View 1 (tube, helix red, strand yellow):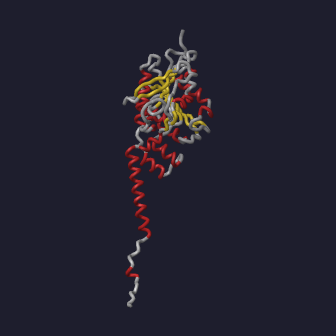
View 2 (tube, rainbow, N blue to C red):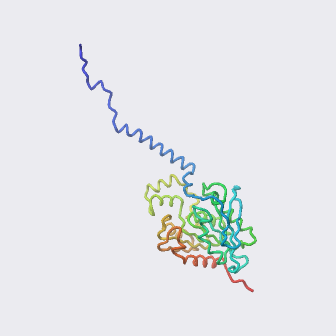
View 3 (tube, rainbow, N blue to C red):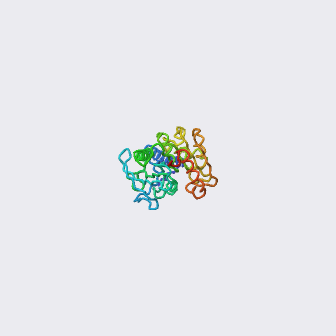
Amino acid sequence: MSQKTLTGTDDPPATPRSGKLLRPLSRVCILLLTILIIFWATGCMERLFYHPTSGPTPPPADHPGAESIQFSSSDGTKLSGWFIPAWPDAARTNPPPTILHIHGNAGNIESHIWFTEYLPPNGFNLFIFDFRGYGESEGRAIRRDDLIADSHAALGILLVRSDVDPDRIGLYAQSLGGAIGLNLMADRPEISVGVIESSFTSWREVAASAVGGDQPGWFARLLASVLIPDHHRPIDAVSRIDRPLLLLQGTDDEIVPFSHGQRLAEASVDHSTFHGLTGGRHNSLRDSHPEIETLIINFFKQHLEVMEIQP
């Protein structure tokens, strides 16, 4: 019986291990790139800015005369808010000045009234409302354009009320509300004065800071630039406002780095005042720095011309 000689030439050529690894790796890269493009094109990532709590929001019983207000945004979405009149024994003009409160990204008006509850006892009407998808407001919070439109509608409600002086309307806005509020104030001269607390310079910048800290590196900035659209930047809006602004930021803000407040102040025109609050965090400045209540009250009184009623 003849015996066949086995040689290496009969074996198929070996496939390099590097080639076997590169093919699935390239597929993963293509898949990730496709996902990123879809997220960018659809704006899905912007939804991460919004964390609404929906449900009934009855007017607060501890504020006399507080009423629930229903109104519509420009696209017909039904919105809800509270109008809280100035306490009668504190009102020094008739009608008293009114403050529009634009709140932050989580919860609803029940969790945010804490930021401005001291204003009606000090002589100011207060209107706080919920964006679409928050509280009793219909719809979903998906795009900043819609939230800005909701804020325009809220201001419109104030301008037609007989108990509101249209020449003495101020703005208080906190965190994400500050980003929305600066864009509103830049477009609407009816707002005479604004207080912006713990807000950020741009949507991409704050997203990059969430990943990479106060001074995000190139990867965090690249990721944010791919995933987050950056129109309606607060830092652009603040540069267009020619009315008094009070900007407040805590040095230990764990959500929006302190440098954002500084840069907003630097980008604003000469009408702004910036207060850095040592040790202050994002949502608790009233607790850690109770003096800001007096600061805000006096700022509004000064620029809304609150004077004693003459007999």
